[in-house]
Length: 161
Ligand code: SME
Image 1 (cartoon, rainbow, N blue to C red):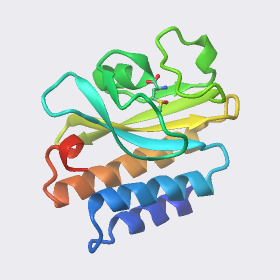
Image 2 (cartoon, rainbow, N blue to C red; image 1 turned 135 degrees about the vertical axis):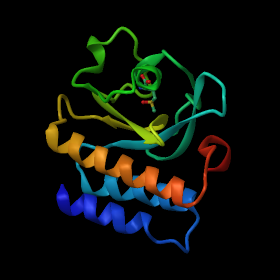
Image 3 (cartoon, rainbow, N blue to C red; image 1 turned 90 degrees about the vertical axis):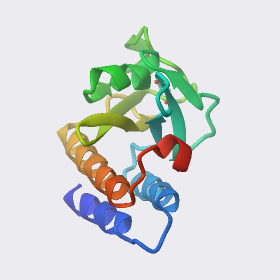
């Protein structure tokens, strides 16, 4: 996974491309390289509203383009500021299903200037697939995304990406 983090960081440093194109490519890279990543996407805090807005993603289209804070796995991470690893989505009461094929989910927040501005969300069709290696990879990717947003002066990614 270290090599993949390295590739992700390099991809995000391709400064001639628009950040939204880079984030979409990053989703594609992660999905292609990790067999248990089936849907890979970003949600960002929607301006000053207490909700998340869907950003770039790869995988099946989702109806959940807006998620209120507190709702589902994503909405819970928006308020907890902590990673959320769900080995079995059926065991979660506060879960928003996007596809009947999804068995597990991991959400890792993205911090810019100490503020939780969004998250990486991954759905898996494999049961209980996530390990510390996924957390390490995705925390590294989240940090690289934060660096990109800061360096490009993107303060409202939900509006700009
Ligand atoms: N399952 C998420 C909703 C987003 S989809 O996975 C794309 C949740 O419970 O917040």
